[in-house]
Image (cartoon, rainbow, N blue to C red; front, side, top):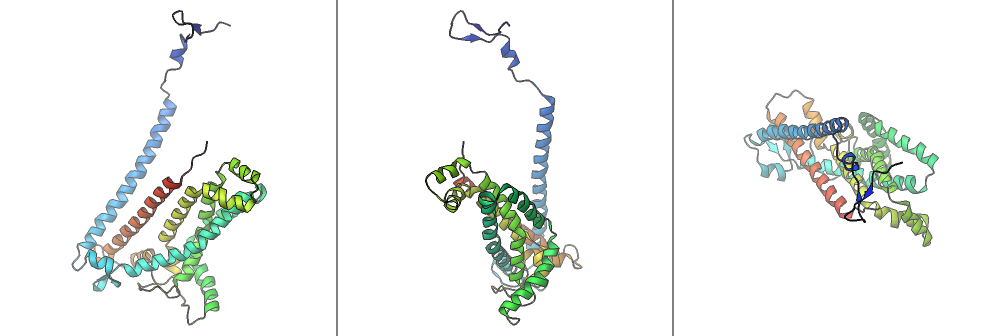
Length: 320
């Protein structure tokens, strides 16, 4: 068979590729160009959708802040929220949201991370194939069901433990605990993926140095997957902050500035649900206040995502 490569007479050490150079040139492939254009279109639609949402939130929120008596100082410093009678302090809604999210994180982060470590480091392939779908089923349960679970099971349980005179029927503690249960599958699934992505050679090296399975999981694998786990935590926090139906059903109605988790309080999303479900006239102060709350929620989750990106970039480890 005749070879296309030949020695260059001017320099015997080089090879003249001849006609092969033309076959290595970049050629236009319609299929790849079509796929690339479709992916670009999807990304552009996502970006423009986000811009549209922010624009509408900002436009309606601006109308709220242009209302007589509404000032940014009162909005961010006052502890009374009743726009209909001229009280525009957002802190009762913010504190209830932060309390519910904090309780949810205290439940979801340790449970989710422990589940992820078990699935990644201890569970057999058969056990993993059974447990992961069960966790995904928990993520697929409608949140309204979780809300009534909090109201009919978690609240009576807390009242039986701490007393009926301590725990009110509607309270942020039961709502936060159930929100934590709700996001456990999210934390465990994302964390397990991050742990599973750690090269097996690190585990084998730790075993070769005499480390136990627990020491390897906690001191080698967990730090190596820290960036992915951190991203999972921040996504879970954002999910808890934005949860609506559980807190709308179980946490209570009516803004109340309190730090007692056993008392009723209304979160930002719960307030939006309650107000938007009533008979609101368009362009009223109550109607426009919904968008101001939504814009603040947007900036809260945006801040969390920005912090997450910095943490992931700081602790990210790349293995070859």
